[in-house]
Length: 274
Image (cartoon, rainbow, N blue to C red; front, side):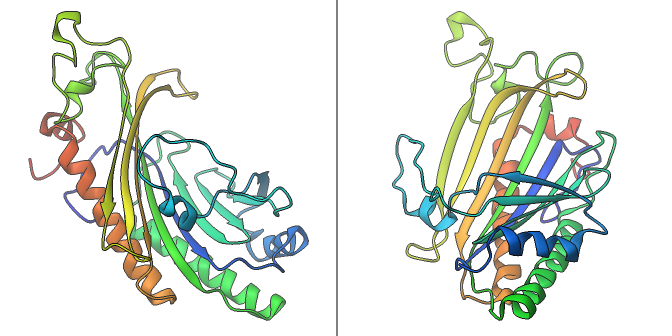
């Protein structure tokens, strides 16, 4: 994670950057297909998915028990994925959002750094702006941004984690002997924590951490999947603000990762200043 200490073997499996903008009624399925022509050479594969709910609406939801809400209209255009040939880079586009994901695929690929991922996203955003201006005669007005890190923490062997419930060896705030010491370490465990991020009001945001057990499909290794997400409203509706605020969101997510994970695990991941 580029905003802080460097790791020789970071557990990063995926990094996702996204920007939300005012919905373009003219950016429908046909136009999204035309947009692919701008990316087809480097991203030859496409997939169609259900649109994601607006970041702005998610931030308006009060803290408390989470309930799945239908925040996307049924007649909405789809969310298209444009995927590069190796499968490690992915563009996501829908009528009110553009995103870029880097994925550790194949598994031996090294995480390039946040700066490299951000530079890729900037190129994609510039291409999208050109398309919207040339083909739709419109301008994008960004409103919110999001940074998500997905870390795969391997379970068993010499990996530092004894079971999918051994959060005490991963997290500083979880007791090593488990939440109920008389019962020992749980077979499985997960957690979700969320904090306000930044000022209150339209520019405010949220910083969240979610951990749950999982299995890596490529090799069947048991995992603890740790997802850290920073969402926030932009300081201004400009692309300069997008790049500034994505860096702020990235630093917040990095700080969360460094403060909640134990130093022993960070040493296993090759933190260079420990």
